[in-house]
Image 1 (cartoon, rainbow, N blue to C red):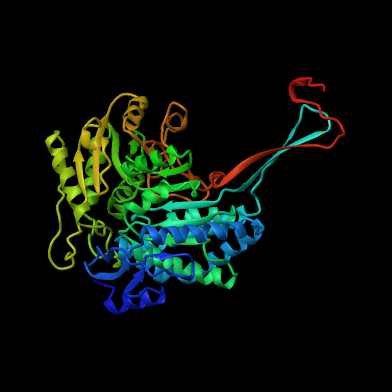
Image 2: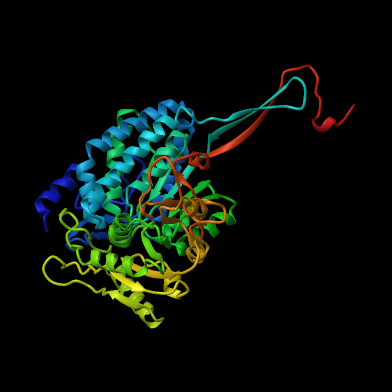
Amino acid sequence: MSETTTEMQQVLKDLGIKPVNSGASTGADFLNTKGEVISSFSPVDGKLIATVNSATAQDYALVVQKAQEAFIYWRTLPAPRRGEIVRQLAEKIRFYKEPLGRLVSYEMGKSLQEGLGEVQEMIDICDFAVGLSRQLYGLTMHSERPGHRMYEQYHPLGIVGIISAFNFPVAVWNWNTALAWVCGDVCIWKPSEKTPITALACQHITNEVFAANNVPEGVSGLIIGGAEIGKLMANDKRLPLISATGSTRMGKSVGAAVGERLGRSLLELGGNNAIIIAPSADLKMVVPGAVFGAVGTAGQRCTSTRRLIIHESVYDKIRDAVTGAYKQLRIGDPLDQANHVGPLIDTDAVNAYLASIEAAKKEGGKVLVEGGVLKGAGYESGCYVKPCIIEAENHFAIVQHETFAPILYLIKYNGGLENAIKLQNAVPQGLSSAIMTNDLKESEAFLSSAGSDCGIANVNIGTSGAEIGGAFGGEKETGGGRESGSDAWKVYMRRQTNTINYTDSLPLAQGIKFDL
């Protein structure tokens, strides 16, 4: 690999990572955890990065206790002051951008550019949150009662539990924490057990800033463990909000548990994203948009392009162009910027990829670009696979299912755009969507209430990539949650309506008389 062991050891040292690490922290304090050992192996070269002693239920109880204590202080700190601390965090992340981006790439397997881009997302959301800290606006209303004033305000909610996935091991955490912290909440983070080392690095970086500002223990909690920790969080009434990112199966479990106790859940789950390619589409925009969407992060984005829905009049041309582009893809070490595609996260993901290809073949799919697992020098981890293209029908069971791997399905449509939209919407998921067209009527129809049913709908760009500022999330089995931008901050707060009587009389609403 291009990254030498010595170089990576330096990265780990710079980020405060030890060979053996605690799996629970209340901030600067790391607990003496004694749970199951989690060994993080890089999918890049199969080498051990470091180990973590996972947290137990007892460790979790201590982290929650500290969070409860910290919230009492943190909610009273003026929001602009909380924003100033988050501004300093952005500066600290800028300082560590290079090593943290490298660690993301090495532990998760995405390209170095994507790793650095993910860290940039952290910086951007912090910058967004700084401005937000001075704009947590309520509103005033007129009362029907004379001498009364009404207004609405937002207050901190409490402890926010964050459950994140391996594919964006640092950005999703920061999407939530940056907003939650300026809103006056404290946070407890359970990262994916597949990427625990990047989580530890984030905790160390945060600690540097919090210590300099005398932020108490408990504002930033970290708890590393398996599904049992997630269950504790989902069922804990002391956590009014659970923000969970991951599979639809996981989200249904979390949502049910949180709903049972009438808590709030912010769910960011699976996607089955399509690009509609209309007859007027510009080929030079279609190819890079579709190919990056399908193979970026080795197809392990929730916004990855899974389906191309192509009009029959341009189908052959688009098919040939996309399959031709696949022949130019270089697969290998993601830290080598000459490569386009890195590894899948682990061999379980590889097996799921292979099973999906076989399932598509059995249903009648025609393989246009063969898949398979790469072997030999540079592929020792067993996690490198070939991006695959399959001609398919939208109704195939495997097409309806999200496979977290670089498998792209080509689907033909005929007639008007409404037929393509019908195909696009005919999956259980509803995260991201796009149309390639130069026809104004088609683009507007796609964006209308009768168009895409997804939370994200793009015109002449691909499905992947979230820009800070817009609310990120999707509909249907994607979970309905929104985070990152727009007014997503409101989910982290409780809303309160206030009525003030500044007279000596007490009139009732709706003209009701109640004389004593």
